[in-house]
Amino acid sequence: MSAYGYGGFRGSREDQVRRLLDGPHPVVPADLAPRAAERGRRALARRRVLRAVLWTLLVVGVLVAAVLAAVWWPEPRETIPAYW
View 1 (spheres, helix red, strand yellow):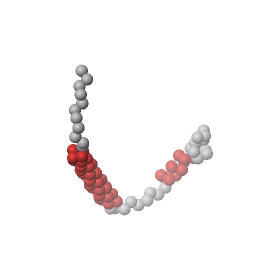
View 2 (cartoon, one colour):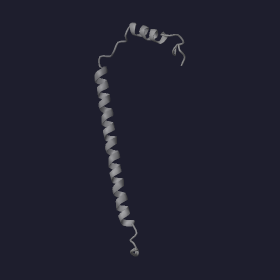
View 3 (cartoon, one colour):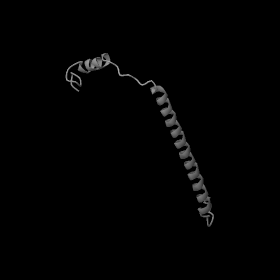
């Protein structure tokens, strides 16, 4: 980065931002907040469902692995002799 900042001249970005903020502001739709809130609720609900499904799959996978390990684990053929 040069000593003059990103725009090439010191303060040019600040001047651009000031010009944008001093200009006319766009009209905001009246129903923007309710639409945003509803969209957020849907995103949270989707995230909760996904998290529940993933936890369920994890628990089922662990249970299946435990059952398969208990069924297929080979029995020891002989005991290990003591060394003392």
